Amino acid sequence: MIRESGKHAGVPEEYKTLTKASWGDPRHFDRFRKVRAETTESMKSLCAKLFEQFFNNQEPIIELGAGDGALKSITQDSRIIETENSEAIFRSNNRLYEGNRVRADALKLPFGDESLANVLSLASFDTLFDDDLATAFSELRRVLKPGGRFLHLLDLRPNSLVILDQFMKMGKIPIPYLDQGNMRYYTIHRSRLNELFEYINRKEGAQFAQNIRENLEDPTYIHQLILLEHGGGDQEGFWRIIEELSSLAGITRYLRAEPAFIDIFKDSIGQAGKKAGLRILQNTYRDLEGLRTGAIKKVLVSAFEK
Image (cartoon, rainbow, N blue to C red; front, side, top):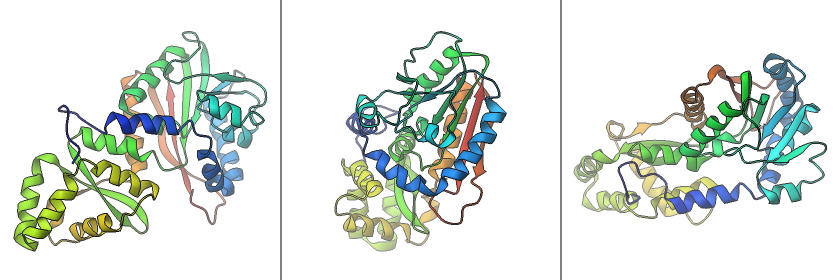
């Protein structure tokens, strides 16, 4: 278990720093392009409907965290002005940023108060930890005109470290398991750890209880989870312990099966928008039409109005 430095300790800052820096690495987008390869036409159709619904005007659409220019490439909407904070992404995707583009940080937008009618983002706010998400929405409220709208689309799995950080701040220790090939998580509250170890000791003996204790209380436990999420390192022994724990009879009285990460993010972005004083127009899943295969079947559409 990660050592706590305070009551609401979450993911250690060094991991947050590495995660934030990694989103400036253009190599991420090679993977994203492959995942999205089969959804181009479906996304184009969905975006056309959403733009008509939420951006039914002739004013510019400011896209935050445009990355490799995927959304403008898909929509071909000339109103989109792409913004990106990473200099490396700008350099590597220079040809993709045709027309207007702005170097901008979502946490400190270079736009005047109440100056924008339309703001857009694709799979970027899920990379923001709680404090940064609150700051980003505060900035949105500042720059949006009265009646201005922000539309966020999420077609990928939310950033795992952001969700793990939320668990830990709530005092929950995340325990992974596979559900039909998808990574999911149980959690147990820190206050019930000793109770859990005593139960395991009674059911499976002291040695197995000690193995579980050593894994969950290991200061590098969060690092093990990150390796699992990203497929790095030799995780066979770690998985074996976790699988044995998850299959233990009666264990569900201690472990809580958490919702899918995208459902957790859905609640997070909705709450952050409301706290910033924005009205939620929509925060629901939309199916991508005409798809028979592929990893992406639906998009989380979160729309807000000032």
